[in-house]
Length: 420
Image (cartoon, rainbow, N blue to C red; front, side, top):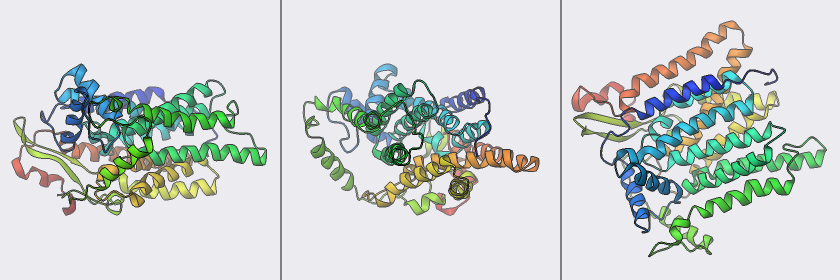
């Protein structure tokens, strides 16, 4: 499927990343007050600065990044949101580079970046002081490092070490990355065991099975537990450094205890069909009526499901490993919320599954572009143009722009009654 060598599309990927960074920076400090779940995580970061317990039901690393940003930029909207903005931009770049390293396809790599940048969720989460973008951005960096190790004859050891450490930091931001870690471990160690059993050439032959296990299991766990370091020294309710199991039971109990109904809560069956939106903001603030709505791009989230089915067929029929890995990553990251014991869930939990959905759609666009004849190139390019066009149409309520029709402005974007 990906046999023909192609030129590295790094210049196009830099352009997409810079354009995305500019859009993220636009009105980043609006609203000028805390909104949605910022009311939990910014006070937690302030508590960390004061050496007090901080939002103990979640890991500490993303909150520590917010605390560090507040120290650097001040206790203001820029300081609160800079970590998410930074990791959103870095994560988009890393996602594109991971796609290039894994596929060797220029169109697939650039198309996937454009699709992710315009899938709504990656953009909105890059502009709010929550935990999700730190987790997701670091996860993409880890996948980039690991994919780079897999297709290089040199430097594979340090890339795997770095990839394992970054996976641990991602886990230290939010547990949502657990399924990604599990799929990576299963894929890498499973492939090595298969090679040992069949005599086939192993992945990463420069690393022994023990080294792979250390990089993918021991290093992430060690890096993850070290992210709790600030909590070891709080004056009260300190994290017990020698009792990780007991502390995690406590964290799970705290998360499971949140059962109060929320008007914007939803479940996975609603996420996959883009049924239930969340209004992070809709009020008069900073001199105008403004809104921030979280929902997926209504074009690409549905097209992505078709691409996911295609990826499963393509992986089996053509014996292509990358489409199957993307199906596994999507299924595992969504499956966490299907089987997880979290009573109240929200659409932002679909951030990682939606990311892998855009990767599968990027591969499908490349397949149309490369293998279906000149006529299909128009369809492939049309998917990207439509994705950008829909993103542009919804941009005012993704970016907290001033809405000039007053309180009824939201009606212009309510394609479904369930988005209200």
